[in-house]
Image 1 (cartoon, one colour):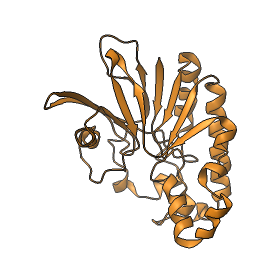
Image 2 (cartoon, rainbow, N blue to C red):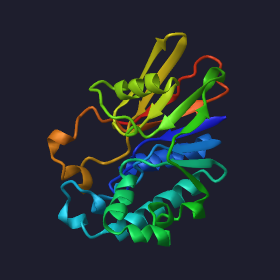
Image 3 (cartoon, rainbow, N blue to C red):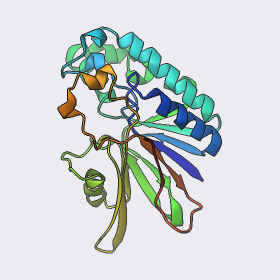
Image 4 (cartoon, rainbow, N blue to C red):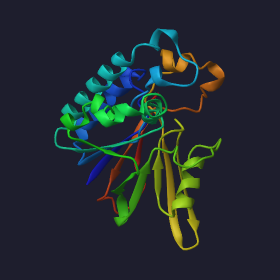
Length: 240
């Protein structure tokens, strides 16, 4: 069983050439499962942080761009089971509604419904998705914001979460790419941070300023093969 794990895309501020390569990879690999690690959407219009004025009133454009991305993902992985883990940027929608117009929740106005995830046969998960990897092992995929704290080292945050949850861990959130392995008691664990697929030159990133856009951010994704008897680790696809 092959699973492609896709980190933070940040639609509509995604890196278009990288996303095109991702879709080509999905068509070529024909994965059984696809896991979106969260922050698929940026939802810049709902941010409580500094915003680019050009995007403050364009939530509708963000949603339509998200629908197009999910449609292209479904087209590329026609037979794949697709899981969408909620990230902190999707949670911007939840917090905006809860804080300002909580009654809208009674009408089913959610980011999932806005993006038509049911239309594309995509399963939303807020607690992570466990998938098989090599050597008969499993790895838990989460976004990464679920546990506070950070690390300057690639995979350092993922390692902290692996130790806390007591299982192999694969996260997005940090935009870094790395893999570490360790032993905790009698447990042999590995931890992965999967990169991102955003474009730092797009408004959602550029408006942050250069100091908030570390050069350690790496674009790419990962592929797990449960039939691999040599290693449980994923194949990391790293883009220039």
